[in-house]
Amino acid sequence: MTEESPFDWMAAGYERWHATPKGKACIALEEEALGALLPPGRSGALLEMGCGTAFWFPFWRRAGYEPFGLDLSLPMLEQARAKGEKRLVQGRAEAPPIRKATFSCVAFLTTLEFVPDPEKALSRAAGLLLPGGSLLLGVLGADSPMARSRKASGQPPWNQARFFTAVELDDLLSPFGKPRIVPARPLPPEFPPRGEGPEEPFFLVAAVSLEG
Image (cartoon, rainbow, N blue to C red; front, side, top):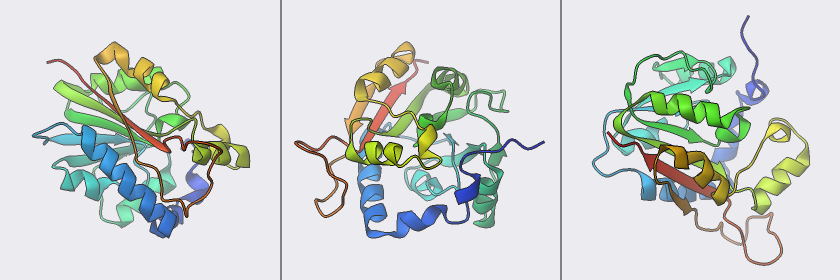
């Protein structure tokens, strides 16, 4: 029997938010932060864990990678296939149905927050990397107004999310090497929610390269 995902119900309309003014502003800042940590001379296969509708695949191609995707949600993968994407597999990040070390990079974008065992998922991801490959994480910052408001909504899938701080990302990646962490620049002031005092980064990017 196919395992259900908390994202199943939102698959058909998942990318609508990305087309809103706030969504476009977030994506631009996230791409900027990701670009700061993508390794130089990048090429080869990239596996995106929790790829969803393959929204990020065009970005990976522009960055020089050949993207592959894994997601637990079959409806999300169906949306990706409807766009012509074929290099997709259903499964959990903690137990990907992939056996060989094949990838130059394994990426988790707003995915680790919903993985029950992030340490196991990262360990399995590291095992799929070629020598010198990279783990790349992009998460909503735990201390940001955006993360707090989504968690407080009580709505799925956010009611199941675990958000991470920069310190926690460093702890998660340190077993694999020396992590680098870059916060996204703040959203423009016209986009709520905003907290009291200095704005905390809404998005954090962390990367580590495994020694060959």
